[in-house]
Length: 266
Image (tube, rainbow, N blue to C red):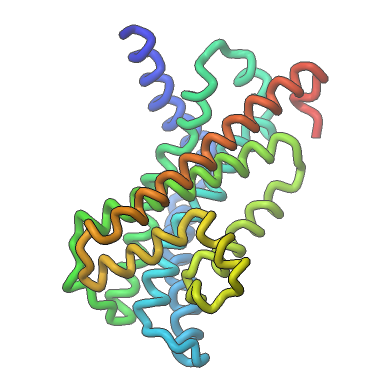
C-alpha cells in the first residue's frame, strides 16, 4: 500500500510540476492566444474553405473534425515538450538518476495535457456554436465528454512516443509539425476517410483521432453512445499501444545513453 501511495503521489506531482515547468515562461495572454485564438483560426479556415471550396460536406463536418483535432496541440506538442524539455534544460541526468518508478514518471507527463487538450476541444466547439451555428441540440453531453477524453488520451499516447524520439534527435519540432499536419489529412478531420486511397485508409485507422473524430460527429448527430462504444474501445487501445511503445523507447534510450555517456549530447 505504501508503494502504491508513493507512486500515486509521484504520478500526480510529476504531472503538475512538468506542466508548470513547461509553461512557466508563458504569460496569460500567450496561453489564451494558443487556447482561444488558434482554435478560432483553424476552425474558421478549414470550415469556410470546405464549404466554399466544393468540399461537399456540411459545416458541422469541418467544425467537429477540427475541434477534436485540437487535442493534438496538447497531445503532440505539449506531451513531447514535457519530455524533450528535460534534455534541453539539462535536467535529464537528474531524471534518469532518480530511483523513482520510470513508468510512473513517464505517464505522468501526459495527465494535465490530456485535460488541457479537452479544454481546447470545448473552446473549438464553442466557436462553432457561436459563429457557425453548430447545432448541438441532439448531443448527449456525457457521451461527448467521454469521447473527447478518450481521444485526448490517444493523442497523448502518440505524444509520448514522439517525446521519446526527442531524446535522440535535435529537431523534434520537425517531427511534431509533421505529425500534427499529417493528422489533419489522415484523421478525417477535413477529408472523409473513404476518399483516401485504400492503403492510406489503413494507416488512418491505425492512428489516434480517426475514430474519435467520427464518434464525436455521431454523438453530435444524436447517435447513442452504445453504438460508438467499439470504436472508442479501439481508440483507447491505440493510445495505449503508442504510450507503451513510447515507454519502451524511453527505457531503451535511457539505457543506451547511460552506457555511452550521452545524456547531454545533442
